[in-house]
Each structure stands twice: as C-alpha cells, then as structure tokens.
Image 1 (cartoon, rainbow, N blue to C red):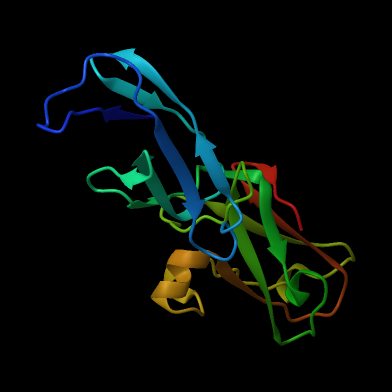
Image 2 (tube, rainbow, N blue to C red):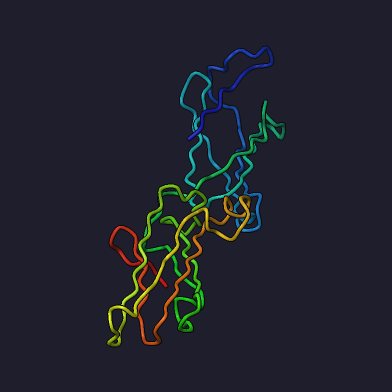
Length: 193
C-alpha cells in the first residue's frame, strides 16, 4: 500500500477529492517485464489517495505516478520485490546426479529453493535442506560412504548470479554400485524433484 499526498501549485495539501492519479507498476527484467499493473487510487480525505497492490513476482520494478500526464515529484520510483519465505512444495531438486551416477565418482545436482509463488530465493541464509541417501539394494555397511555438500560457500556461481538465482550445488560421492534413493527435504517435507 502507498499513499499519495495531493498538493496545490503552492505545495499546500489538497483537501478535496477530484485529482486523477495514474499509478503504473512495471517489471524491468525479462521474467517480469510483461507484468504491467494499472493500480487504482481511492481518496481517503485530507488530500491523501491510497493505492494498493499485491505483487507475487519478485524482481526489479518501476512505479510511475502521474497526474494529468505529468510525473509527480520523485516519479518514477524504482524498487525490488524480494521473494517470500521458502516452502518445500515449490522448491526443486534437479540434475543428472539425482537420477544416476557412477560408483566412485561424484554426482551433482541442484537444489533450487522457491517461495509460495514459485520465485527463486535469492537469500539462502535461512534455508535449511536435508539430503538423504538410502540404498535400495543390500550393501555391507562399510561400503556406504557419501557426502552431501550444501553450503553457500560451495556454490559454483559468482556472487551476482547467486543473488539472482540462489541455488545450492550438491555433490554425492558413492563408492559401491547399487540402487539408491536420494531424498531432499526441508523441515521434514520432501521437495519436488
């Protein structure tokens, strides 16, 4: 929600309704550029007009506010919509390492945390995923050795890409051949993959 204070030519607050503001929200990136919203305004009194919007696509945006075709002071405004809290039901695990691997070699896959609207998380400091590996064939206990590396410091992208994509790179190192089930969960709930 945002409030617009109408002023007269001497910068005094307007007290009566009747000003026509046009408020437009537009994404500035490839994934959200087609998101253009015309936001209506409601007069609340004392020259204040309220505009409300609910944006579910994260990214960079421009908010333009005009009155009779002229920008108000400060318009256009640029801001960032951050992703919401990570949820397991929209997060993904994908890559060849989650489907197949070679005994003795590293297998790799990616965990992509997402929010409830499907936005990729760009901050991973509060994301806690668990990786499990269960043999589906009988193996002697001493043969099973694996490591799951899930740390922002072990990611294979630059810091700029990390802030834009926010994923974990996972490596599994399995010695004995066999059939395994790889599980990726968050807070006890399995993620897609």
